[in-house]
Amino acid sequence: EVMLHLYSRFGVQKMASLLDGVFAFILLDTANRKVFIGRDTYGVRPLFKLLTDDGFLAVCSEAKGLTELSHTVPSSASVVPFLPGHFEVFDLKANGKVQSIQMDQFHCCTQEPAHAVYDTVERLPTSFDEETVKSNIRALFENAVRKRLMSHRRIGCLLSGGLDSSLVAATLVKLAKEDKLQYPIQTFSIGSDDSPDVLAARKVAAHIGSEHHEVNFSVEEGIQAVEEVIYHLETYDITTIRASVGMYMVSKYIQQKTDSVVIFSGEGSDELAQGYIYFHKAPSPRAASEDSVRLLKELYLFDVLRADRTTSAHGLEMRVPFLDHRLTAYYLSLPEEMRVPRAGVEKHLLRESFKGLDLIPEEILWRRKEAFSDGIMSFKKSWYMCLQEHLESVVNDDQMKKAHVTFPYNPPPSKEAYYYRQVFEKQFPGRAQWLSHFWMPRWTNATDPSARTLSIYKPEKDQ
Image (cartoon, rainbow, N blue to C red; front, side, top):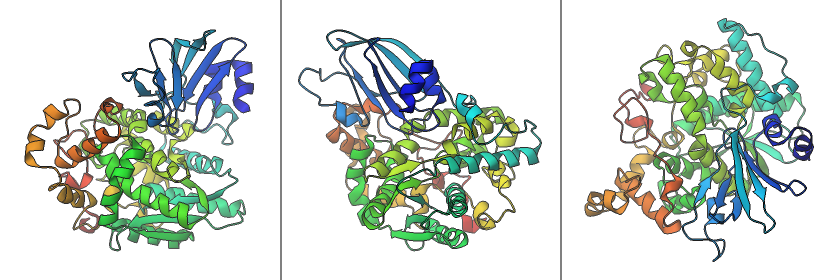
């Protein structure tokens, strides 16, 4: 309803820029014979497009929905993810076919959103004094969580015990109490009994007073879920698949065992606040800032793809406060030197912003970064090690030697990657170009995306 009013008053570009949230839309204007499609700034909501040479247009929230439409669509027709933060305009012909006439960006992550003038947080002080900056970050983050509290369905939160999900969960519980929500916030963690994530999440849940659920993760169940996870993800990216298995399993638990449907999560913080451990190796603050923006622009290929697909596969709705437009634009506007890791700690500015408030335990506030796919298992044996050990016997050496011949586009760098590609090709033959590149750390010679393989990684127990 809002979109139609905005479109009729302002046109499609301003309509899209005024939307405060996540979305994918197709709008048909029969009076003016136009079709419009668009997607939110970070691609939190999925959108795929198929456009044939003769003007047949189809869109879907999953790529698989477009691969076998009918015999009238050429098998070679390209199915592509629609670019986040963009809209496209088509002329609608009398025969129902279309012609693309405009493709434009309506918002990017470094721009203050047009809808900010209508926001509940007033204009913030513009000083870069550190105390002012930290106060602004807190105000914008709390506002981001508050805006996402609107729901007719029960709200819950994924809680890994890391900084990001802990801040989201704690703020969510705090605001729910202030708003006198009629039920306790449920939090959910997954991992083996001795995993750092489970232990940390338990401490956070006790501190904030959530109704906490722990889902036991077994290697056997995880391995069995891989093919199903790849089907839902529609990717063969290594780290995305690793991290998705646990998220898929905890989402399945939420759907089967609870009545929570709207699920908050901490996605986007690592990209925004330079949280990946490899940022310690950045050659300069400018390089770190540029890579932060790159990661945000590529979220739709990796982390928000994982978050959306693993939850929506079980009928859940994901909400990601760290990707609030005002918060991201403000954070990226700060001096580059303020945003880099400091004192050997990544996301230093974000942590400092919540220091001394008792929102979450101090040990969690300063807990070292753990990838979701690493933290669900113990320090002694990571999830990725278990996968590699299992797949060592599934993919043979001869297959690996010929990997660049078998898969000339994005050749798999390991037996694990080879197996994922095999499964992907079986489910989506000839669609390898859905993934432009593998996610890998920058400024290192890493051949594996796990943070635990980096020389600069130090487990929490060693700090």
